[in-house]
Structure formats: C-alpha cells, structure tokens
Length: 208
Ligand SMILES: CSCC[C@H](NC=O)C(=O)N[C@@H](C)C(=O)N[C@@H](CO)C(=O)O
Ligand SMILES: [Fe+2]
Picture 1: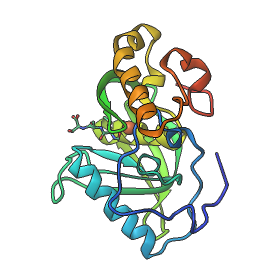
Picture 2: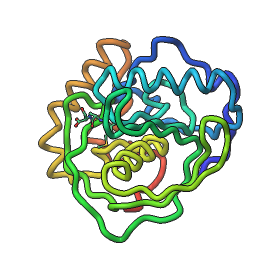
Picture 3: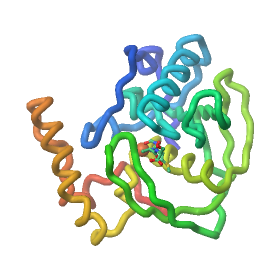
C-alpha cells in the first residue's frame, strides 16, 4: 500500500472534469492517500458522479479524471436518483472470495472496448467516507465487480492487463487507435504500446 499523503495541490481539479483515456500516463501513476476531508473533496466527488453518469459509467476512479488520489465513486444503477451511490476514500481490501466469476467489462478510459474478465465474486473492504469516517462493507455481484475494476485503477492497472495475450490480439487495433489519438493530440510518443504490455502493466504485480 502506498502511504504517501496527497497535498492540496494533488487534490486540485478543473471543472468540468474530463475522462482521461488510455494511454495517458496519468492512468499508470501512483495514487496518494487522502487525509483532507473538506469542501473541495465533496465538490470533486459530486463532479465525478456527474461525469460518470454523463458518460454512461457505473463507476469512476479519481485518476480517470486526472486526480492521482485514492478515491472512487460508483453506482451500479448508472443513473442519478436510482440505485445506491457509494464513495470510497483510501479503500483497502481485507479478503476476496475464493469463488470467481467472468463478466463482460468496459472502461470509460478505453471507450467501446469490452473484455471478459475473471474476478472474485465478493470482497470485504474498509474505507473512509467523504467525511473521513471509517467503515467496512462486504460487496458481492455487480458492486463487487465495479469496486474491483476501480480498485485496479487506484493501483495503475487497466482491465486489459488482466486478459490473455490471445484476447489482447482481438482488441489490438482499438488500443493502437487510442495510442495514435494520444500521439496526434499531444505530439508525444505513446508512453506505452500494446505489444509492450508486460513491461508497462501498472506498477505492481497482479495477484489474481
Ligand atoms: C463492470 S465494471 C465497469 C466500471 C467502469 N468504470 C470506469 O471505467 C464503467 O463504468 N464502464 C462503463 C463502460 C460501463 O460499464 N457502463 C455500463 C453502463 O452503460 C455498461 O454496461 O457498459
Ligand atoms: Fe475503468
């Protein structure tokens, strides 16, 4: 676990939030712990839900909007006013179920790309809420799936890092198109290429 604490500067953001797409290096950076529970954090959370709903998401991690801190929001219903909105600050996993399930997953940072990803069916976590109060919760089914997808973002892992090389071949063209889009937009070489997956995957070894 990364114990570095985010400064006020690290928590600064620009409205309206925009989704950061692969292969932007922001998605692979370390995400710092939050210990400032103020109005700025509440505004960031509110705007994260806004952009998540607007882009047809069901979960969003702070690095996906360019803020490298340990924060995620999700609502498996995907609509404001429906389902349950969850905000997790500095989440930690206590345990994963042995039972795993496959799910067809998409990512707002990899538009229109989907993959079957195997993950534990349920997970026990603890976290702080937006006011800084600690709580524990057991998640299963879709909430557990979304949590694990967002928790990966907080470790710099993208869902295609968890697929087989054979599957990767089937989405290579789409990943390369995103790499070209990044190069055209920034004038910089893509910081990672799909064929260099092994070297570029996150900043830690994937455990399951
Ligand atoms: C199944 S976990 C997906 C979480 C992801 N969050 C951030 O990247 C996300 O919201 N992805 C969307 C593409 C998504 O899953 N949208 C839903 C509802 O439109 C879908 O079924 O595609
Ligand atoms: Fe994602």
